[in-house]
Length: 474
Image 1 (tube, helix red, strand yellow):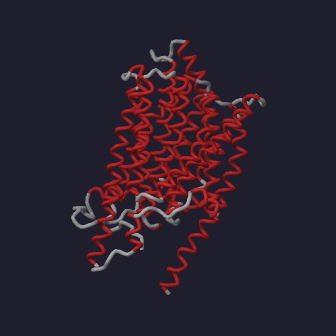
Image 2: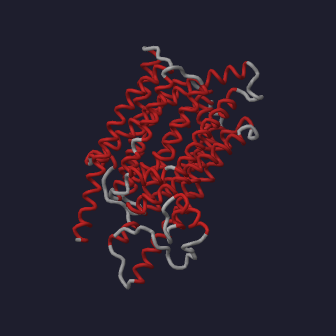
Image 3: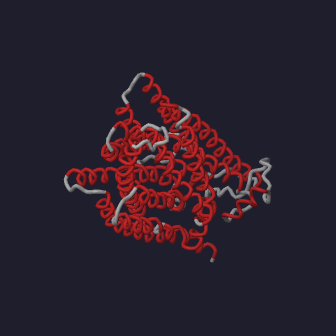
């Protein structure tokens, strides 16, 4: 049976009822022996999101200053196309390397990319070209690394333990975003005109610590399994040693199209990101003219146009992160307990439905900032936790390959479809921000339908898993 990491391995020195246990007990149903692994995973995803949010304002600055907001929308299609090859390569590697090496190699790959961007800058690459390349790269990096992490977390916990502990782990994700945007906002000015490239190097160093934590967590769990087998005077079974082996052969896309559950989940992800993509375009559409006007009127606090866009973007991301932090701390575990994993899936689309309904009456910078802040805050907290928990009942291949394909390719396919709609709406239909908000309202209704289909398949899958246990207990 798969290890749930409920018991701490001998020699760790973990005290079941220590200060950390009592503190975490306030926010979630943590149990003795679960604290250390949960905290290590929390630190891991904290650093991952810290690295991403350090360079997220860089993305906005490079693409919005170097190109028009429409270019930002069109690049979503390029990300989706490239992800086809990335997912195929990842699936190939996952069938040949154990999980800790798989995650290590993928993280090292992204670290090396950040170093290359710095070299490109030293060689004098134009900001417009750099903005396009970096925008495509970071759109792949952020969703792929997060999907990979949650596949790892799903592989460690059982369904029962994961539903209790994922709110704690996801708190690290939310907190990393809060610290990341705040640090970014503080250092943009002091780092000077080359702030973007120095922040890339800092983010690369942070990712190095993520590798170390992944290895520690992996070894800790394997050690725990072995110690448990020795205490029982048994040999490790195939089911217990499988986590040190590569995954079975097969691609992530084939897994999705073989499973109604994964397919409907993927369509939820596509719909979610289409709505978010159009929302981000609305934000960019109101942000750039506001920044230009502030610089022209001398109300930018001495910042140039590029720095002001990055600073406002960091403040906007910070608002979303603070909202996410509050939701993660005080609501997520309770919502999961009240309505379950499947019921939690419906919260975000209904919040988005109300938000874009307001924007249809008029889009201002302040209004869009707060509505998008609430939408993104719910996405970063409750929705991220829910998406992770939905894979607790799936196979190991579905956890790594299927989730990676759904959370990356279908996520960016939402971008691609959004890019098509931005192109048509901007160039032919002469849409303004309010018109794009109306489009989102329609798509959200479809999104809700896909959520209902996922809930139905989740209940079926859950019933199949619990049926054998009920027969055994009877």
